[in-house]
Length: 52
Image (tube, rainbow, N blue to C red; front, side, top):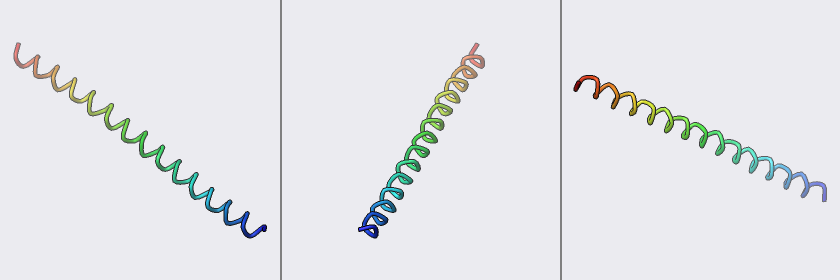
């Protein structure tokens, strides 16, 4: 029985590790998206300055 518990514990640990990796990847993607939007706003602002 303890062998089964150990295997289940290992499986859950791996699962939780995968969830944490997914969360980190999501945060990275969200940060990249935020920075891209910020960059686009600055580019648009600069274009307006050149047009004036």
